[in-house]
Image (spheres, rainbow, N blue to C red):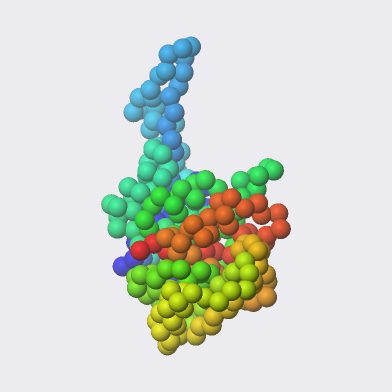
Length: 280
């Protein structure tokens, strides 16, 4: 029985992630834990802060959240009437978002977090917002990030960008292989270099290790030269039927400018391509 955490702020974006998760894990027996987190604030009267009483918390925060969670469960039952392998549980918490998520991961033995991503708006548009980036970087749990425009379709090809500079833990590779077999999909292992150079001895060793591990599933190695990794990924996705990305958390130094710092005016994949961030 898998335990899947679904954080929600009751937005269309988080509802989209819930739907994606149910589709993605359709054949798995799962406990879906739907979590709404709010941050209690102090009321200020004049210069004196006033901490809300339990009754105020119940009336102002808890009851409205519980009503919306019941509505979410109703929407799920209406849209997915035959989810016999799935059980749904709802929770509210009042804390910093990342702290609440980490608490749930520990207490409920969460296998995967599925959450919507919506980049910051305005002049500085980034691929994902602060909540998702905090979860990815601060919580040691596999996370499936669903962009706001992503709709579930059976994956055709999955891209796995890597610089071949590290040896990946078998737990991570096993997870990837499980997804490949579930959907009978091809893995495209992608190396993007800023200039044409030969792989080092260590890189070739790690490349061979990947080839050996995935020898019984459909996979290919691809090598691109591009000064910007994000542009290289964009070009690769546009030239293929890529429906998902795998990224490895301990390799985030390689990808962090894609996820957290890059402006996205010229990129489209961030709006529609879900990506897994895998932790050891």
